Length: 267
Ligand code: 6GU
Image (tube, rainbow, N blue to C red; front, side):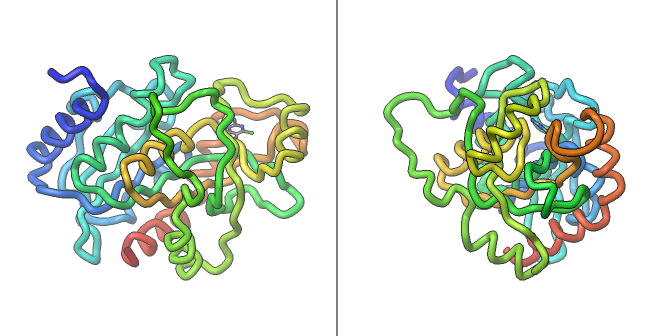
């Protein structure tokens, strides 16, 4: 057994290759809340199993997060690795389990990481519930970072411009926005939501930023897409709940699946 995070990811990648019979993967796709119903559109399933079969993975504790990993062959012949669910910082296991999937994927050959999530919309004047928004940049307010030590990773283009361009070719109606991450698990107060609008945020959630940082550290390109499932607290309407977040995903699965499949086919 290895006890450093990168060694554990390399071990998990070896197990992954053995369990899937796939020598190397090209792309990893992390499906967050609201995106799991879109999984089937991405390609033909080669193998699927609980993430806990791989060293270092913990079972997700959140409804709507299946906690499985699926190896897929896409129409264009790429080997894709799909995580149906993810570990969040608010689960209290620290930052390493949060980024272990991304590190494992990169250790298994992946050069492109697609991160999806359900997010609150901070701009209800221009955003509609059920709409996907490309992440152009992020503000990390989780209080955490997956990198320790004096490793000064450049985050100028965390969300690879070429991949955003490619996504807009697939769907020219896609808006872009800055994703703000809080640790959670509470949703924000209305005062926090007003603060985030002032700071230049467009989307608010509890995931993605740490995985994006880990992917960039490992040299992979990143595409981030949020599904706007509700407006931030106090902006309009009812108090927020997780069931509503999942319901929007079920209603929009076809569009989300089509978007992911077409983007992956252009890689
Ligand atoms: Cl409004 N806030 C956070 N932190 N996460 C969310 C959300 C809001 N809506 C969906 N996920």
